[in-house]
Length: 98
Image 1 (cartoon, rainbow, N blue to C red):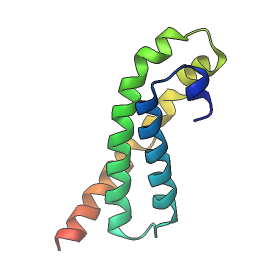
Image 2 (cartoon, rainbow, N blue to C red):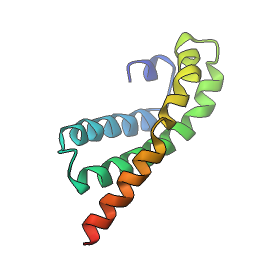
Image 3 (cartoon, rainbow, N blue to C red):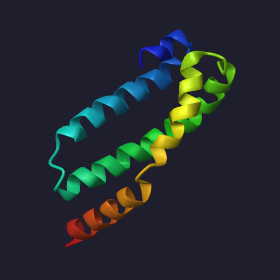
């Protein structure tokens, strides 16, 4: 978040990032055993995917910046446990539908 203004990210993108981070903070406080938690997390991660996609051109413009280099290195970590997350979300929806 602190790097976004320094790297001249658009204000509307930073606002959405800020809202997403606030939502993730609330989701982190929700009970992990509740179906609603997993559905909320799936929604937040879907929103984050859109923000990440929008950010790609930003990263290309600042490719030599150390932050961009760390992003290029660490981006793969976002896919770790993706299959397990999908399964938890599927089970959460099953529980909610009864």
